[in-house]
Length: 123
Image (cartoon, rainbow, N blue to C red; front, side, top):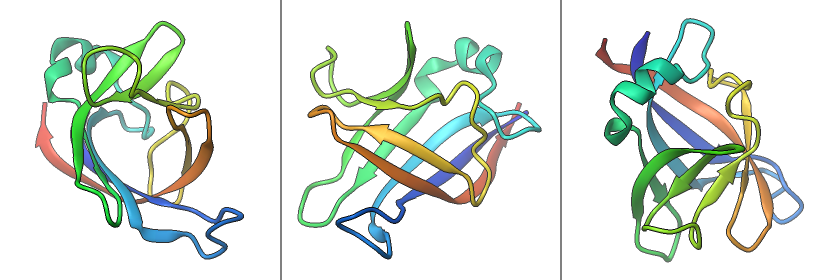
């Protein structure tokens, strides 16, 4: 298992038929050999699980990747009002070329593609 920096970029969608590299997230998560989040490592050091949201014409947002009762989310402030939920992150791998669906606070869902997954810290 190793902690990885993972870059997600907006994949094809109706508004972005070619996707958008300028709409991206940088995650720092413990990932096992199958590309899935290592929940044991996460529980040992949840404060290390971070997210940084890059969006054009907006300030970057930084927060944490959190485990919720029914899944995972990006949280930028205390409370659930700004959380962006991840669809089935507990079963979906985070390998280059894989996809993740993120649900925004307003309920909109967008697909993101894993563009990079680099080891940063071995555990």
